[in-house]
Figure 1: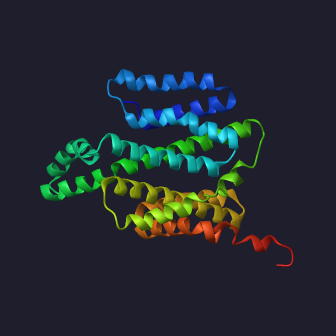
Figure 2: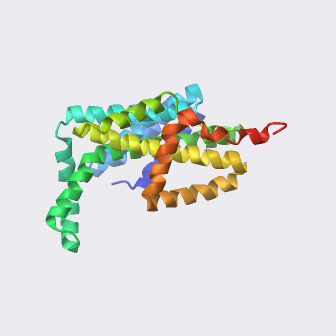
Length: 270
């Protein structure tokens, strides 16, 4: 299997080739990126799907020059993928449980968990694995698109993309996802659980971006954004309270306009 860093680099190169040259050149690079998965004899559907979806995402960015729109397109595509998978494979949770059988053996060997506890853990993981996989795919596609766009712009001496990224804003899709989260509290079908896991993850990611934008507008220095980036990542990995805070920021940003709260400092007479 091709390692994740190799895949990520290959996707970044494909995206950059698309922005710098043409569709035909990028298609050649995409075929070259997929060949290792075919030759390995074990098709990684997540990796192949990420590579194939890269061009549509880059095409949206190239056409509309909007990170906000590209982010929303990533979300819509991922939601459609989750729904399609549940339609094609009605018992998707059982498939995931089968994938986690090796994990069950490892956990039982450690002796930390009982068999019943391990089965419950695997059942919970299986219920959200499609959503979390789609979340990872969305974030990868968006970041690869951003990095390729940024490098291409710098090579052409075009500046201002960093500001656009810090100020990117979800439109009507944000309150729609918020309403879905509220409604999902009353429904528990498998596809709803997967969609809920995805929506929570993607909204936390958006709250993360909004928070970095607030830091950038307040300090007006990229150094503070970089420091905050590592601090926020650490907090996301270590505390659930910070995750809830990011989710709250995301669902309220459509109304609150968090990145404009310091604008009055720049206005004359304030």
